[in-house]
Length: 129
Image 1 (cartoon, one colour):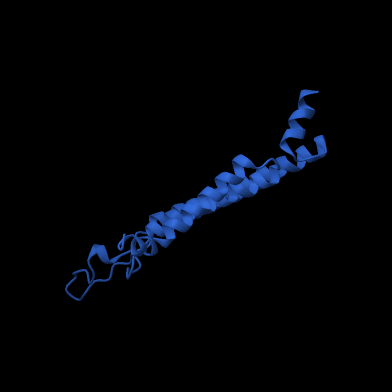
Image 2: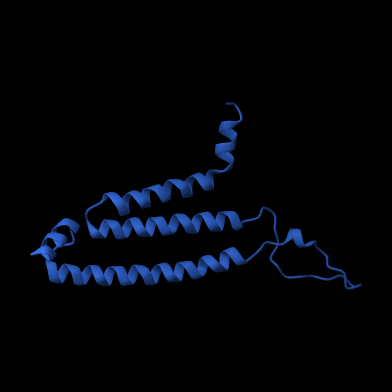
């Protein structure tokens, strides 16, 4: 039990992303308001981004630019460099997330104009009539 608390503290970024993930999932599943569902989706996406960026971070790593000595030998080993791929992929995911949010808000605006509400049960009841 004594080693559990330091383990939790050492992995705080994973726990934060897990908490955000569950908050977003709760917002998407349990809420009846479509705007709250969209906010839950954004929180869910943010949790995934935080998780991937945190696993891509490397303590004490250098940028992946190779430096060579006078005798053409690399100055640092490959393990001393940070891998930029997770961060680049997350930049792409941010752009996709913003596009998804824009489309979702546009559809939500159209739903509100047509049905006069953004409550899911009222919209479904209106569609049944």
